Length: 338
Ligand code: NAD
Ligand code: WQD
Image (cartoon, rainbow, N blue to C red; front, side):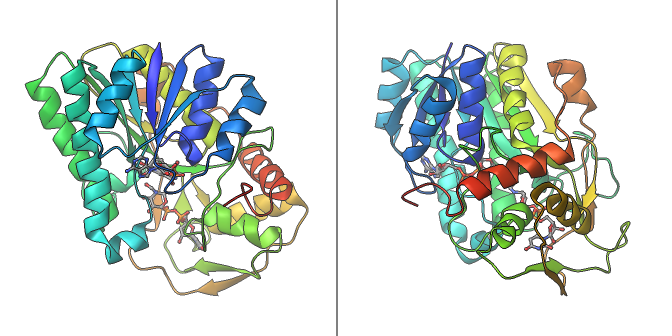
């Protein structure tokens, strides 16, 4: 099976390409290099021994997409490409709606023209807004609190309407919880440009000496230790989830929605302490005010994915932190030309 992977050089996309290759699926990477660089290709090759086809392109370029879909005999698309920084989305909403919403509409239009009718979309637990309770099931009401989240929600709604009108399509919405970790080889991992927005890249940059201390955003939440609680999931488990989705429902018409999480919640301080243990490094931190828009706690009920996709997150917190540290300590400044 040849699968077009938009955003395939990014953090989650690159790990998913590896797991696809291991599972005998051929990824064709389509990425505009906005938040990635080509050296990732060499790393994928190093780890798998295979060199995936790479096409530099933007998902808003319909003609280019049509050409690749045809030339590479693509039978399904996994759509990671997009912008993902919550804070930036508040400053630049148009860019987010254009890239994330318009980009997806152009992609689906191109697929329709070529007759490729299977799509897996990267959605996010952010579509649950501030959930009334935990764990969160796929039936929970959805809402958005910022343009990034709204763009994901809009895409989910557009795809739902589209699938209703085109019942022969298979559309899968995967709602990721908090992806962390890296490939166990230490060759691939998360490489944010600038100051990391997310907890684990920040923690690992403190541990490696690139930043002085971590600001813990709030210690007065109604949680086990007062700090925010999230469902951190190893990026390799998340990647396996995509392979399972492609294999189990990728050829079955319908709208398929799954939470990809572990079902466990860890606090910020628990993550810091697990990271210190894995790295043998001290991670100095200071308690700071709450970050606007943050919720107290959030974790998944992942049982639907287990039941229907036969997928379950297997990797432990220790593996998440050990693999993050292995990547960060081997690549203190991320990928070479970033
Ligand atoms: P990433 O930024 O590492 O990867 C995204 C990739 O898409 C990059 O390689 C970038 O160059 C590419 N890209 C961006 N706009 C493009 C465009 N218009 N055309 C072609 N390529 C484009 O991000 P990631 O963490 O790997 O996230 C992948 C997807 O998963 C995103 O859609 C993101 O919103 C979603 N997601 C991420 C998280 C997370 O915490 N990382 C959580 C939930 C959902
Ligand atoms: C986790 C916890 C912070 C940084 C975001 C997006 C979500 C999804 C994943 C894409 C929270 C605390 C963080 C720091 C801290 N992305 N924290 N100091 O906010 O759960 O989710 O990324 O879809 O849409 O909103 O993840 O990693 O930013 O934060 O104390 O420097 O760590 O307050 O409790 P979040 P995060």
